[in-house]
Amino acid sequence: MGDDLTILQLKERSAKDVKDEASETRWFEQKVLGTATKQVRDTLKFLDANPAIKVTNERGRGFEIRGDQLRSKTKVVVYLPGKVMPAIAKTTRHYMSRTGGCFIPRVERQRLLRGLSNASYSVRHSRLFWLPAKIA
Image (cartoon, rainbow, N blue to C red; front, side):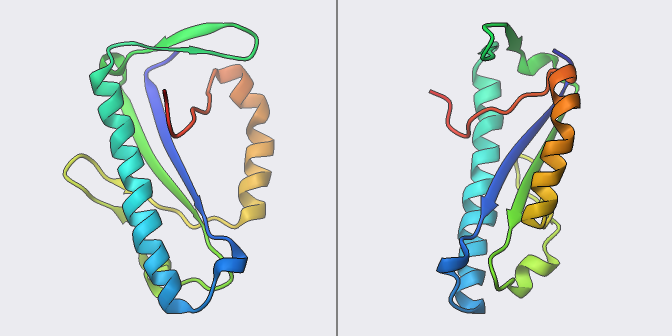
């Protein structure tokens, strides 16, 4: 499969839930800095705990992800803001923890969707894939 892995978590704030900057700050701290970075750490732990993870695509073709054979693990949390962007979200570009840091870009919804749409060809041909946040 290759020896580089990108762990991606996407957090989007619903526009109807936006009240004020204080509530957005709490949401950002809890969901982006808390939940999303914990999900990234959980993915790293899952890779360490399982020597080989079998992945099968919709066509039935499978391959294994072997954590011990990965050269790099890039950790990204993408934040799609609601109507109000709190000051903390404007200034936070990365998050550091004992188990590894995450890059946290702010991305406009349309820009993300356009980027994913444009990436579909290279995704297919480079065998890049998306895993659900929760693996059973």
